[in-house]
Amino acid sequence: MLTSPFTFEKPTTIADAIEAVGDSGESMFYSGGTELLLAMKMRVIHTERLVDIKGIPGLDRIVLTDANEIEIGSRCTHKRIAADPVIREHAPALSTLCDNVANVRVRSVGTIGGNLCFGEPHADPPTMLAALNARLVLQGQTGVRFVHADEFIRSELETVREPDELLTMIVFPRPTGPVTYRRFKHGERPSVNVAMAWSMEATSSTIKTARVRVGALGSRPQPLKAVEDALKGRSIADVRPAIEAVLAEALDELDINDDRHGGADYKRHLAGVLLLRNAEEAMTRGKRSR
Amino acid sequence: MTHMLPISFSLNGQTVSMEVAAHTLLIDLVRGRLGLKGTKRSCDMEVCGACTMLLDGDPISSCTTLAVDVDQREVTTIEGVTPPDGLSRVQKAFVLHGGLQCGFCTPGFIMAVTALLKANPHPTDDEIRHYLHGNLCRCTGYVKIFEAVKSLAIEHVSEDAA
Image (cartoon, rainbow over the protein chains, first blue to last red):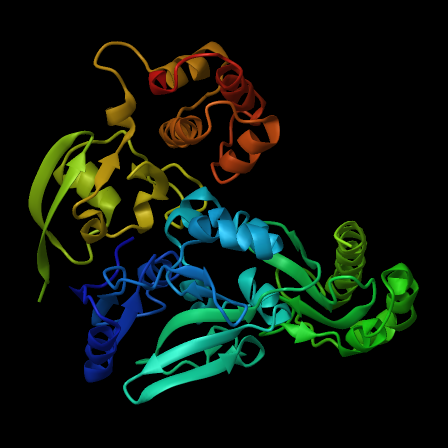
């Protein structure tokens, strides 16, 4: 299948890319194309012009900053993130996640920024990044703004990004406790996924705070507030009973679509199973590192 | 109006310079204008792996890659890994172990396995399955393909012999 014709530009600065997209109103940013070209081939998306951001230096950087935050350039491929030493050391669960997105060919060229901007509900990274309390950096003609990962996806396949805003970077605090991710899937995309991140003091076995996100069920990842509250201040040894005491109530609050990945009740059950598997791994990791 | 762009890239070691429409897909350029028909199109949505080519050594889905994206880069197709006489080490292993029946998925598998062994000459069983899970075969049930790759993974040969 062919896309309809478009023109193609490859600017070398962020400002030029934003200007190129902003001017016409009919242009789109382009990098790996693993989502966008598919949609264009199916004629679901039409654009007059693609503005390739692969020629812009710096958008594929991954660094741990002096402020103890991890910055990932938006056009880092899944392959790049999976292999990056900073990510492997400080957020190994994200490395593993990226090593399991779709298939090896998609990981070669598909980017984390493209994945996020597509707003596909059945995706791996948004759930994990929300659990990591990530902020997304959007740069437009009038300046830069930060959007929390929790707020980025507006609805199915729609984000809060304006068409002429470029997602340049994903930033999250260096995790201080175990980060875990589990998914269930039939095909290339997750049917249900759960990510959990605990913050902990270096010498303590008490969870300071926990962030739990369940993804792929509605339009965007959802928090399990009751579980987060139950884990706050809890010792690692007490995690399982703490979760089990509130799990049914927490799962009831999820907004779940019936779709081709399964019925709502089925996926609600899976979310609970995946959460408990996350907890088992987090307990093991949390104990080992203390 | 069709936006034509000049590109220059290495195709199986030969430099190719030409003008392409911005919306030309790599698979159409290679199978059509350049006449190399070994690469197969099947699902057309990056799922099956039949159209796998290597871009700077990494496997990609040529069905969903723009030709303009290979400018100044190296593309390898099934023709590029097949010796002028006979078969490559990977191809021989597929024949020896019966890792194909209808053969339609085979060029994609050969490309993926070639890339895998280049990056990791002695992959574990799990690494083989993980790398190849995105290549679909509807004939073999995968066991024969796995056995073919496994036979290569445990061979002690120099890395450049792949």
